[in-house]
Length: 403
Image (cartoon, rainbow, N blue to C red):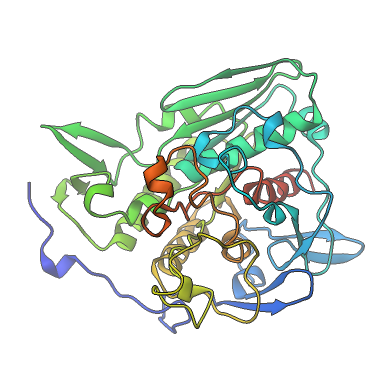
């Protein structure tokens, strides 16, 4: 195995609001505090540029105006949540915050409202009718599984008498609404590209999608995500070597690795997916809330550790973190723009960044009593409670599919 030379271990970098020549879009988040909830006004050149080939499509026509889906405000709505955890037994323990003792419920009562329109209300029966005989597949990491389980719960709440069938496996799990012939599937592929074992070592194949891709071909709607696993190091790192261009690397700049992997995915989609019959989506980077200074300028690790104890969305005025995710967001946007037939980017990063209150924290069935007693080290501030934020992702997904 040949380690990556130091001259290749880094790539040009810039801050999120920097002026690098390859940075094709500018994102700005302004958070406006209201008496009911937090507001996010997302000023994005990506949303208003002239590159019409890029199928982000964040806007739809309503009342003779244009609605920017991903710019808006969280407003309190007593009609929420859209379902109860007790009515949806497929929720995994790590997302089932109410079952595992979360004492507050206000985080369930927020609805996303775009700045100049109202989102269509999610209608599970309409979803089943529109998708009759079709398969929707979520492909990616556990954030994709988070969204998949949310959609099952949302549709099930609208069709409580429908005959259903669940089959769980690795990498493929499927929930079927038998009366409608609708399948909702999740395929675990945290990097999207292939990873396999050779000579006892886990090899992340940055240039290959073979074993994974065959399972995706028959879907009518594909929703992909990746991101968090590319940043993991130490015991959390999911590979021993990366392979690209016939060479093996012990490490490389993580955004550069993500870009290589995503370009492999994008080329595979362009070459293999018939876009006249299959809709393709990509879920943007889901933010974490481990560093309180990202949402509270006065916070320090001595008085606030992470998302533990957070019960309301971000308020006040802030800008997006200059940590790892802006780099990943740039990569995702650039790769999708360069596709021959670009995927629809479900741009949930900024609106999710406001929801520091939406994570499982210590209220996860995956944690032991000892871990729950030590939230500073054990709180899950990556995934999201169900019911919760991924329900909004799916409301936006539903809007993009049918409106």
